[in-house]
Amino acid sequence: MKHRSRSNSKFRTKTMASNHSMACKSPGFLGHNVAGADSRIAWTNYNPNYTVIFHHSPSSKHGTGKMPSFKLDSNPTRHLRRENHAHEKGVRVLSADTVTPNLSIELLDAWDDEYNGVVVEPTSLPSSANGFASALRTSLSCWKSKRKKGIWLKLLEEQADLVPIAIQEGFIYHHAEPGYVMLTYWIPDEPCLLPSGPSHQIGIAGFVINDQKQILVVKEKCSCLCAGVWKLPTGYINKSEELFSGAVREVKEETGIDTRFLELVAFRHVHRVAFEKSDLLFVCVLKPLSFEIKIDENEIQDAKWISVDELLKQEFYEEDEMSKRVIEICMETYEKNYSGFFARQVISKFDGRKLSYLYYKYVNVK
Image (cartoon, rainbow, N blue to C red):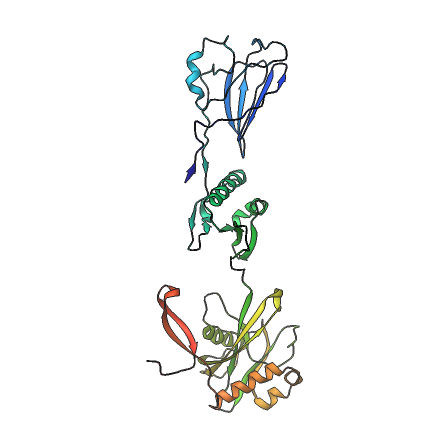
C-alpha cells in the first residue's frame, strides 16, 4: 500500500531575503537556492521529508529589501516551455534536466489481526534505517487514523539496528526469542489490553518406581538449594512439547531409563523464581521400561534406585513440606489409593481442529 501526496496540495511558505538567496519552508518540503548558479529547479530526497532546491540567476532584479514572488508547483515540468522568458519574475524551470519528485512513501507491509490490531511482516521491512523510520512514522499515522489498537512489530536478529528507531517512536519490548525480538505499540488513550509477555517457566518431575518399591532419584551438579540432595529427575519442557513427553525425555536424558507415562498427579505453582518469573512444575508418574542406569555426566552427579524411607529421611525433606508431600502423593498413586489426571487426545477448535491433549480424571462421559 502506498500513500501519495495530493498533487493539488497547497503549501504555506515563508520567505527570507539575504542578498541573492531565498528559502521556502513548507510541511514536508524545504526549498533553498544558491546565488550565482544557473537558473533551474532541482528536487532531492531528504529523509524523512523531501528537499526542494531552487537556483536563480543573480541578474534578477530584486529591488531593495523585497523578494520576488514565487509559488511551488507540483508539476514543474510544464514550465519548461518558458525557456526564453528568463526576464519574468518568480521561480521558473529553465533547465531540461529537471527531476520530478517522487512523493510516495511506502507503508509497512502488515495485516489486521482479529482484535483490530496490526501485525507487521518482518521479512518485508525497508532495508535502510532511514527508510524504516519514514515508513514506520507514516504507518503509525495511518493506523491511528483508522483507530487501530495494538501494533505488533517483530524484528529479526539481522534487523537489530532498527530496534532503537522503533523504541524512539514509542514501541516497547514485549518478549524475545533466539533470532528475534517482539515490540508492541498501544494506540488508544486507555489502559493497554495487549497480553503481557511470557510470565511462567514450565517444568516437570518424573516419579519412577520399580517392583521393589525403589524410586529412581538423582543428584544434580549444581549449587542450588537441592545440591547434594537425592531427588526426582526434573527439567523444563521444550517448545511445543507435551508435559508427559517432557517427563519421559528428562528421565531418559538424566538416567538412561526408558519409561512410559501413566498419569499426572500434582503440580506446584511458585512465583518470582528464575529471572523473576513464576514457575509451574508438573509431577508425572512413569512406568519403567528399563532398569540399567546411565547418567548424563554433564548435568548429573549420580543416580540410583532408593527406598522411600531413605529418600524422605534426608534433612531436605524434613524442612521442605511441599517436596515431601509430592513423594507421598506419588506413593499413594502407586498403591492405588489415589488417581491423578490422564492425558486424552481431543479435537480442539482453538488448535485448528487438530488433536490436542486434555488432562483429566477418567470419567464415563457420553
